[in-house]
Image (cartoon, rainbow, N blue to C red; front, side, top):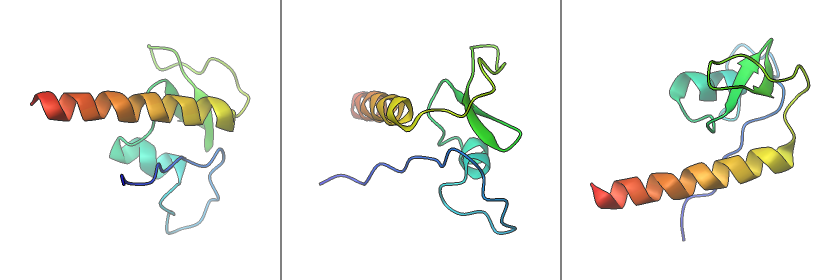
Length: 81
């Protein structure tokens, strides 16, 4: 069995020590799914230039789909190398 998929929270909890699912921490570590970014501590969809597409928080269903796609493409790259 593989590692469990870790999705980011839709809003940052503003704790001093960041949790593992914090969108700010995941953005810094590079674990955030492609097409997503953080704007004012809220996870949002972004366009290729990095600008937010909307000010509304990202939906969990869209986020899970994007994370699964990124995880699959990451496996293929690691096998080819």
